Each structure stands twice: as structure tokens, then as C-alpha cells.
Length: 47
Image (cartoon, rainbow, N blue to C red; front, top):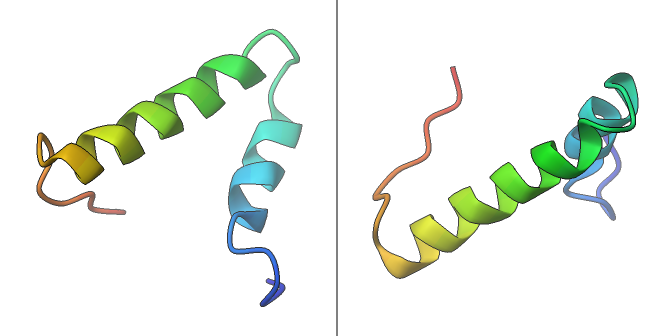
């Protein structure tokens, strides 16, 4: 992974799915970040 792009893994994931699913992945990630920032979600765990 590149040090200048912290979301390279997300871009790789989006590139691997069909085009119509890509906006859904980005929207889900944005929703999780928003919930984490507002305190709705206290921790996002990566399994």
C-alpha cells in the first residue's frame, strides 16, 4: 500500500465489483464514517 493513499484498499475493492454495485460500497463506507464521527457507532472492527 502506498503511504500517500490511505484508501487504496477501498479503491481496490470497488474496482473488483460490478459497476452498479460500486456506488453502494462507497455510500456504505461514507455512512459508517459518518456514524463513527457522530458517535452512533463507537468502534468499527475489521475482521
